[in-house]
Image 1 (cartoon, rainbow, N blue to C red):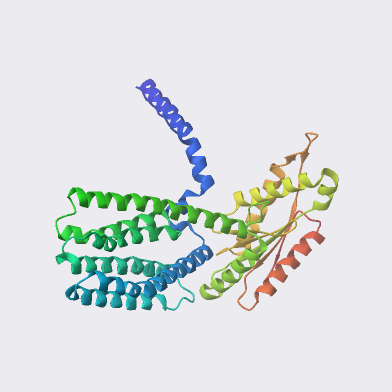
Image 2 (cartoon, rainbow, N blue to C red):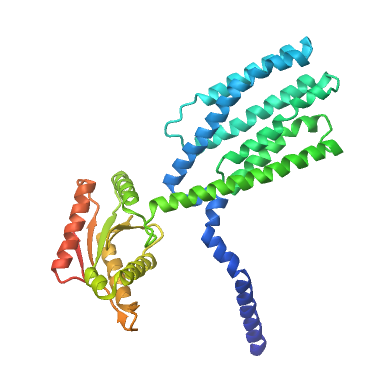
Length: 392
């Protein structure tokens, strides 16, 4: 029995390793492209969501404005094609549609949230779809004519409109499904949806929608990449100073609002100039990259890591007391001693850091908190380096 159990365990282990080996390239691609951010918006940073919301809202308002002006301009064509008993209802539908879109166009856009942007986007798809359904209802009793084909193009335009918005996969599929169902209501009510003509029309809408969703994801991927480049330091991959200052301000306000302990840690590489002078700037860059990796491994996912400038780094520790921050600092010191870098000659290069820590205080401004942390770091340098000083 024991032998059988061991054989099963070994077989399961080998099978697991084979599966991981098979999917390893795809997992690497998944991490490289940040596909989780393309699938759902819950993985987006708050500032990126704000930027994306403004971008979506601006395009919604642009399209709403275009429809507001262009829809009534078709009235002369209606007059030439339609009889009076169809022309007047069509004019009323166009004017009502234009007024509703004008309302969407002039909505305030300052500080538009992601929820507001989504609601406005859905309205932008609902209004033209309802207008199309109403026009088909008005034209239902009109005898077939080649001229009436110009009233059947709106669904294709509505579907194509999806392609100009940077949406996640879940958002794109959800909005696409809703729009296609809405556009199919007219044919469904007339029992023509499951005819060859109706199914062909539905297939064409789905095909164009697939291309539109691909365009949405392409836009979103480019925007995510550009945003990541704008907020991170290219050498270490940590946040840059400009982004750090914004997040520091946010963390300061959050601390004042909730009153929970939060700490600020400033780290500075010891004798970094000598490393550059002795081993070259290439080795100096490798030291900064290795140290950045050490900080990432020792901190939590909720901690905020940034390169403050040169060989200085800052870590924001939400809901962390100065005592707990000191424990983290000791782990960083220990990791530095355990993970030296090999030099060109093969000798290990050990590097150390000095660390200053300050706990957020309601009575201190952000500048004062940074100044106290910097003073604690200076005291650590004066104390012989490779140590941690806490400033209250």
